[in-house]
Image 1 (cartoon, one colour):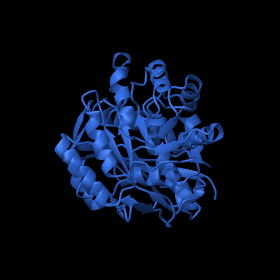
Image 2 (cartoon, rainbow, N blue to C red):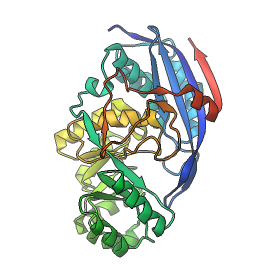
Image 3 (tube, helix red, strand yellow):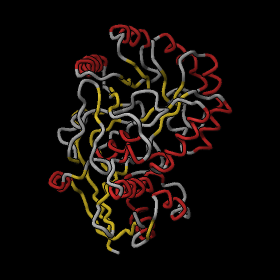
Amino acid sequence: MGNIRIQRITLHHVRVPLKKTFTTHLQEVLERESILIEMLDDQGNIGVGECVAFTSPWYTEETVETAWLALENWIIPTILNQTFSHPDELDSCLSFIKRNHMAKSTVNHALWDIFAQRQQKPLWQVIGGTSRAIEAGVVVASANEAEMNADIESAVTLGYKRIKLKISQLSNPQNLKEIITQYPQTLFFADANGAFTEDTIDLLQAFDECGFTLIEQPFSEQQNRVSAMAQKKMETPFALDESIASIQDVQEMIDQQSGKIIVIKQGRVGGLSNALRIHENCVKADVPIWVGGMIEFGVSKAFNIAFASLHGVKYPGDFSSSNHFWDYDLCEPTIDVQHGEILLPTTPGIGVKLNQKLVEQYEVRRKLFNA
């Protein structure tokens, strides 16, 4: 296959309004800012990536602006005109840059896309995926109960196998239990985004009777001791999200028993290369995995779908249709849910490319870097 030389990189800063407000106890998201990347190699292949940082640092410390600065000033100048035999080599190349996982993930993804294209195989096959189709899951982050009920009914009608509900200390467990009981064929996850504390463990315990398959990140990432304490008191397993940024974090969860399931978000851990290492570690330790979403466009979603095809990914992830969050996705072809499933692509690479017309329509700024 030969080494991959990076000849050109284009950054696109985009801003797209959501169809409806995405509400958590931490933030209301009205529009999605993101950075899309196109990476050209010396054979004319174009790999794409997407930075999943948000506008403000409510999810992690990274933002769209900090990621742009990291890419523009350090990451891209370091890798431009360099040669790589495998995407994993980016880690050592960029090791002088601390954290900035989401910015690093953007170029890691684009290089993986090229790596798979050069082998004339879809990415999911290159990384060892075994499933030709994966079950779809949707996130319901509604502003009020009436809207939530309507969104759940719509998701069930569309065939989604799993529905994730946002919860907080203000949520009514009894109401949620009644809703879940109405749909016995559907998996329901709860996502707390760290809404609970040591002083409110009793409020969290009330959700144990709801029928949730799992509760995602009940406490902040700094509260692993509290999470372990609460997990021992509850039957519903905790799935750690923000707490997991490395293999070391996985081992800490296992040792402290602060959770039982891992949520993989490739952007949060620095890209596909690190996500695959975490996956390998989880499979060896018999720790179930599922793949979380970030209100993302089709580029990031395509990488998540490829990852979800791996053995050891136990539960349906945050995989909704391209038209779930916005009227038009910025990639083509769009990603569609049919009968509750998403078919994996057969074309080389991740199977999608940027829709240039729509990218230009929603573009805030663009920058080109040539070797």
